[in-house]
Image (cartoon, rainbow, N blue to C red):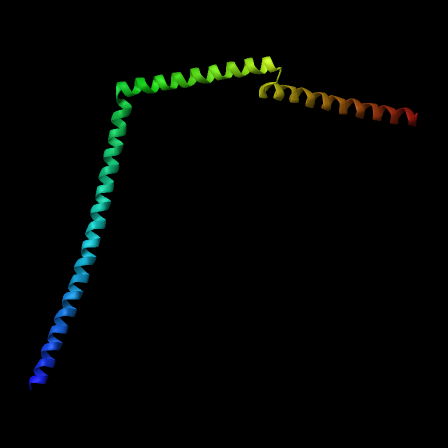
Length: 131
């Protein structure tokens, strides 16, 4: 009987161990789900706080003045660079992109007029030949 009771005791221990492992797995899964839910809640709260903070910053007079100054400096820098490039192009006698575009339009217009004149001349020659 001792062997049987040992076997029974072993089976009971194994059953308790398996039950404890299943409980641990359930607890672990529940813990993971709770952690994921808390993470989602934290992210949502953080996003809300970040939006609120950004709105407060946008409405802060210091930040508004800073943004205005940055935009003004950016505009001034653009004008300065543009004028310096124009001066450089003039010095090097290079055409700017807008100059090239204007010239391209004029060449295209001249080409169109030339084709019209050539067509008119061809038609005139045809009518003189038939007469």
